[in-house]
Image (cartoon, rainbow, N blue to C red; front, top):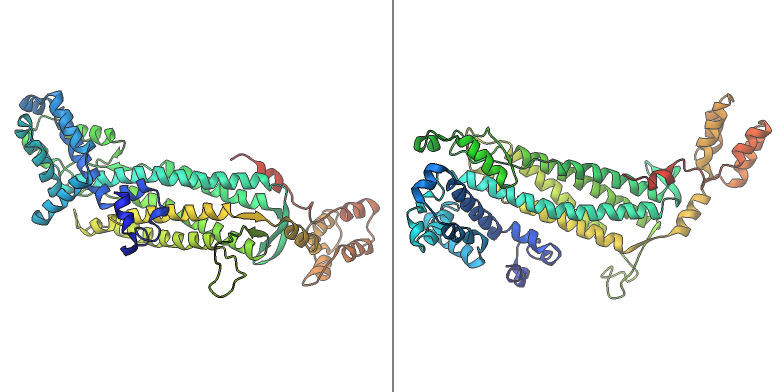
Length: 460
């Protein structure tokens, strides 16, 4: 499938299927394609049929052999592109995407004599949304595995950078202005910690599903067999798919878990977007130098340029993730009475969110692979910023009850160019006791980093 779609990617409307198709995990692309959705629907229909065949009255009625059940399983297991096209052709006649799958499976049942009589048990007591909600839940389960894998790679990269540069002191910036020194490693560690927190939350999301009929009450189920514990059978079935059961629904599963999942993905996107902007800024400050590729062109008119395109590309894709997932979340939480169809077209865009997020992680990873720290620039910038020591000097003075400590340092340093020589002169002019004077004279910008190094190396 992937080779077919990518062969003609230049004619695609979406950049996911076009320009960026070769940058996205083929499995993720397939999962979230029309083929992927149809395949999961077939999987749900087949697995529900097999579950029904374990219920004693139904099992006794149809008496299917192991060979029969193996044949049924292969319909799902061996589902192909050609099969999907057959489903789409059936849909052209019946104009219903889920009903066409039922008809497709029934057609396969007719190929085996002992299955003909049980063909009507396909889609038994199920509404289309029973099939759809479980299919999307399974797609999301598999998609999240891929996304979390890439996110872990980013976190590992950040952890490695944090440790490697744990003691590289540099100027921090608040409001764009020079502020107390930190280390490059510690600032990267902040992002590692933030991302891990959200990844932990993503791991705890309960992906839910339901199989309870037209309006969530098992009406048809009990009309047929009223001595069966249908809610329990449904719960066990949903759990067998690796999902959490939602026992209280209308015709649709309420999508609350999707909202929660997308909220976390949004949070992750904003953290990563912030990281992209910080890396871009460090490149602008010449704290980070980019490895150049002699074959690449940075600008169509300015030959000297090496642009931070990977961080910018990631930032752009993350903005799309945030915007689209917000729109999906808002729509999915509302449905008129027991059901309207507006969630159907909305859900089809979930795959775009997953793919855009994946693409952003790839761009970010590529960006990190092409950079080195410009340690000389970072160190020189810090060594030329002795005004940063106004904070520790006035803090030590205040602790030692020297009047107007803050005001003295403010008058001397605010908006002025301060160097080592005139700062030391200012300290000596304060006429402090020799012990305190020595303590202040020993403070240097490069050593004034608090516990930044320790934080950089701390295991999260």
